[in-house]
Image (cartoon, rainbow, N blue to C red):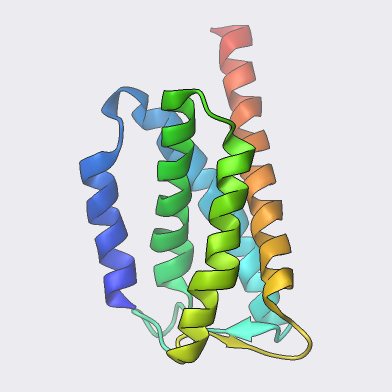
Length: 148
């Protein structure tokens, strides 16, 4: 879990487009906040949990604050730089996280699913976060264009 916390932040530091630093970081912050709320909601309802944490009082920190937001930040950066469709590539990334990465974490006992929750439910959560974070970013970009 410590690797999942530190490695993405180092990668982001190296790969982030410094000319769009504020935009990409604001998107990442928006993604992190929404993802953190969805994750906390799921943990509080007993849908899933992280048995191990990089910092025990903050379960899910490595994924909520680093690996997942950084991955989506790099996807966002890639789509705006190459003028690609954000939604297609973000949804593809969400599918990879839901059906490839999370099952690996489950097999490694780093993530537990409870009740009737399955990977489709996780995908729905990722899709919600992908859309809300992008809409928040678009709103702030619109405000900046309108009043700058």
